[in-house]
Image (cartoon, rainbow, N blue to C red):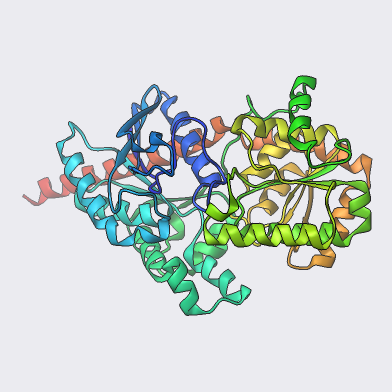
Length: 460
C-alpha cells in the first residue's frame, strides 16, 4: 500500500518535536509522527507521505520551511504553502484549505499511481481529505483527535457564550468540516470506545459501522522502568533550583498550558492540602518557553493563573515548572518520579485518550486521572491507579491524598501498569490492527467491483 497522511498545522518534523509549544503541538503531533514511522516499517506498506504546511517565519525553526524531509526508509514529510507565509494557529486555516486541496489534487494527478488511502488528522485535514477523496476516488480515513461539538459543550459549560466561542475557535466551520469528513470516510479510527459511543454519535453523518477503536501505541524501547542513576543526576539539576527536597514523591503532570488541561485546578488542590504539601512535591512539565509574554493569549492566561496560585499558597520550594526540557528527557522524568514513588496526574477537563498516561505506566509510574474520556479505558486494561471528577476539587484532593498514602497499592499499580501497556498498547499491535482494517476494506471494495463488472457483462 501507499498511504497519504494529512496533518496540517506545520509544527511537525522528524526530530525534536516541540511538544507543548502551543495549543497545536500536543500528543496528536507525536502520535502522527510515530504512526507514520511504524507504518513505513511494515512489509505491507511501500510508502507513506505526510503532508503538512510549509512555514516561513523567523519566530519558528527553519526546519518548517523545508519542502521535503526524510523521516525513515519509505516515509517523508511533504510541506506545501497555503495561506500566509508566517505561522498561524489552526483556527485561522479555513479560508485557505480549498487552495491546499486544489494543490494536492493537481500533484496527485501527476503521480505514477494514486495513494491507496488518505488518512486525515483533525477537522481541517478532514475537510481537505474529503475534497480529495471525492475528486480522485481515494478512500478516506478520518481521525478527529478532538471534536468540535465536545469542545463547544465544554466551553459553554465553562461560561463562554456562543459568540465568544465562534470568534475564538471558528467552531461552526470546524463542526461542518467534521460532518463532511464523516460523510466521506470509509474508516473512522478512534482511540477509545467513549469517543465513538458518545462524542461521534452526536454527528448526523456518523456511521457506526465505519468506526474502529485502535488505542495508540507506546515506544517501549524508550518508555520502560529501568532506572539509571546517571539519568537521575541530570534531572536533579533540572528540578533542584525549584525544590527544597527533591526526594519527596512528586505529583507529576505533563501537558500543554491550555485551559482544557486544567493545570491550575491541580495547583489549587495541592495548595489547599497540608497533607499533599508535606508529603509531595508538585512537578509540572508544560512545554518550553522563552518569555510568557510571547505566548498566545490562552497560554499567557494559564501561566498567569499558575504564578498567582503559587504566590497565593506560598508554594515556593514545593513546586517546579522548568522553562525548558528536551524531548528525550521525558521518559527519564517518568522514571525519576517512579523511583521516588510519585504519581502521574492528569487533571484535564476531558481527555480524548491520554498518551502520557500510557508512557507513565510503561515506566512504572501509577496515575490519578480525570474520569472524563480515555483514562477509564486505560485503567480497565492497566489497573494502575485511580480516576476522579477533577471538577470536584474536594474529591480531587481526597483522591490524591489516598493514592499517595498506601505503599502496597502503589507497588501493585506500578507493576500492573507495566504489564498492561506491554500486553495491550504496543505500536506493533496498533499498526497491525490498522493495516488489517485497511486491507479488509480494500478487499471488500475489489469484491464489489467484480460483482458490478459481472452484472454489466450479463446485462450486455
